[in-house]
View 1 (cartoon, rainbow, N blue to C red):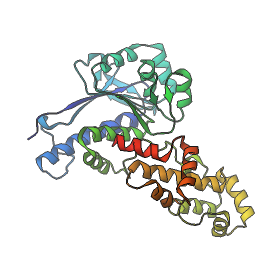
View 2 (cartoon, one colour):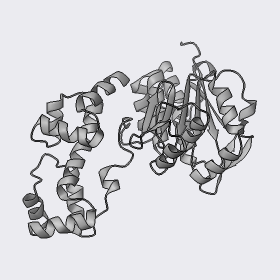
View 3 (cartoon, rainbow, N blue to C red):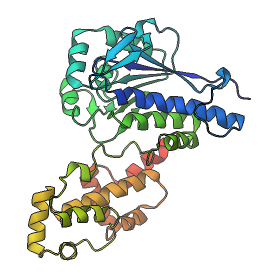
View 4 (cartoon, one colour):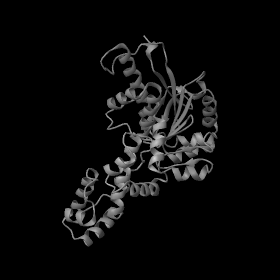
Length: 344
């Protein structure tokens, strides 16, 4: 039987916290503890089974400025079992859970209590993370100067304005820079926790946790916070809506204007005009964006060559793909794939 290797994880709840920003990572770490112990003992997966102390992978603590209820963004309350000032001794991972930007700004700018406690706990922590506007706390503590960081897409402009020395990237769902981890919040807090679990105990355990959480897939860090279908409008015309759905699974098909217009039963001119009006993007740009997003996902997996990735998502040649990719993401496909291999 393995020796005790429990890692202490402290999740800090600030006023205005989004419940999912805190409970998402919390549940992921707790599931990892149960599933890892059952694998060591050779038992079938049973999330209700108790875990022997010596086999606990994580001990997770929810902390607040003081113990007790913490007002959440939704109007409900989360329960902090510990006051952050009472937490002593070394911790493995500190995660600041974010939420409502206005409440966070008011509380953090009017009081140094949160920032000072985060600085204290971070001194002995192996990892320091943040979900959503929790990134503001790390920035206020001076931990992110000169580093890449992200937050919820709707808060990134404010973050960059307040902290010009932080390299804010609004696109990835989470970013690691040395021992500092930041995420977009919401469901991406779960992705961040899964990445940490994978670092600690391997990809197989992280995948098992994702399966128990009924996640479609464990998303790579570089995946965009907002996909093209989310950024663009949903067409009002039913034939255009059907086309948007069909495109996702048919990127290697003939997606020229004549072919798409024929599929919707419209003339080419009427199709192009209606698509741009209802979707907010020309058909050509929309198709290219879908192809580039699919290519990014494939590159992050690192299983195929760049020429094969280009062909798989419908680009006519690798050079056309490379130019479009650099134009969209600011880096070459080769750079992204190499970075993914380093992170794996």
